[in-house]
Image (tube, rainbow, N blue to C red; front, side, top):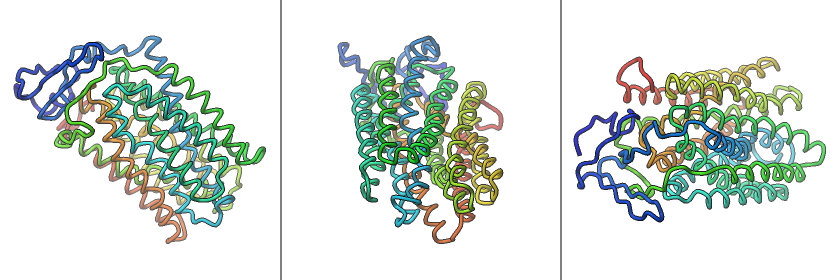
Length: 454
């Protein structure tokens, strides 16, 4: 294989294709026309582009079928991330009701397990997606998510909630979310930021509407029927997703199995994965505890519950704006400032003492954090090629899931130990800003200069 600079080797120049000339370095083995499986082996990085069908000019980047996929993906994200982003409402309700004798930190573990398991299965489902197992994973996970939601209605003890709402819902959501993000990479390239912006709107809609519905329904029909109604909503949204989502490119068997450890020899990939781990140690703290902190300040229960919906509603605009800008400026150039603003707002949140101040923090935080969540996987897509996209996203998600798992409980433990949220804000904000610093390092490694599209 001819020598190439690292930027080309890792797909940073999308309009070029590496010509594989040596069987020792890269072998393309088309094993079966019937199965359509491409087996790619590369000793260097395992992420060498192999086919003209994967050039940027071959991506639909629009058309009714591609946008139908976006709609299905939006429904999936509504049902997974939107549902999970509603956790703050359940945290506040459990502390005030069913689990009032359980510490806030222990209750937060339910939500943290949920958050982390949305990402942790990515390393498995991403690999399976590359091999062609998409429909079976999506349908099985959809049934599991709906069943677990109905089972939460029957929960009465702490371990019941950990099992059903934390573990089972988390695993099911992870089985849906991982391949959903990867499949967008099959249909969009030049307009990928816009597509991901619209997909992530599903998260904002779910995170806005489900907490409002839960708050109203719990008062009207009780907690069990609230969860059943949410289950019926998921039947509709996941049904649409299963009917509309479809992969475009043939399955690919990339050498290396479940993990592509060679990818971590590429400094930008390693730095960006590390940035996500630190960011998720703090990024969900505000969403988890903003309602709880408002109640402790004596703010009315109705407004306290709506703060989470305000944050998620404002994130719609952050997601769409960041998606539009990323196609022009590069996703990394947009993710970095949006995440930095979220970090600053995390520092400011504990010092908001009035209704107006908390509303302002929730709205601005939702807008900025929405931009980060919307585009966080886009740089990973560009740090490699389409053939390996599921596995790379899976490794990235599995790493950040560790931060998502530990972040909120650590914040809850700090709150219990300090008796307030000020130190919590210092901790969570600092974690997010460390993540921003690592994103800047990633950008420097890729570009090597101040100006440029990343």
